[in-house]
Length: 201
Image (cartoon, rainbow, N blue to C red):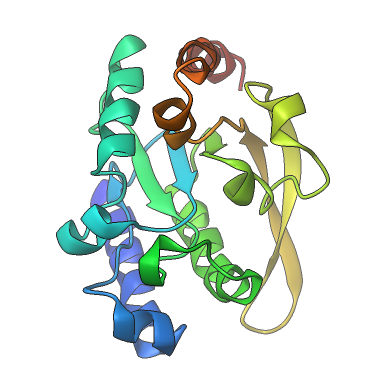
């Protein structure tokens, strides 16, 4: 089962390269940063796009934000071995700029495919840009740390509209706590909700 899921994820990663998604981004990046962690995870964390460290190492959340994410996971007795971590956009945008809407849209089907394969109990978008892919009409300042059960529409290769039911628990991006120390306690408090929601879904 886990091997099948890992193979499914490998196939999606290959498809991004084969489909030549966002060639300008790919050209400026060192490598594809697809995702890492447990392919059978109950929790999937979704960031926005890789930064410099992620681009060099080929793994999401390995810089300062990643260290804080590890700390927060540890605070609820979890580790990266238990979860899966990815980004919407899989190539580093130049100079760490925000991904363009068209870039996020181009990668969205591959994120949807990842989540379909892993089939987690909870998807945890980190930051407002990531949250907007799941809860476009909400503001993260009002809904962070709150679980939402949604039907997430997915367009199949055939053009047919389908979708999956998922629980989404948006959190602030760890970078928020790096820029604003007062946000640290907010993030750690929100993280405590993860285990509670996990028991409920």
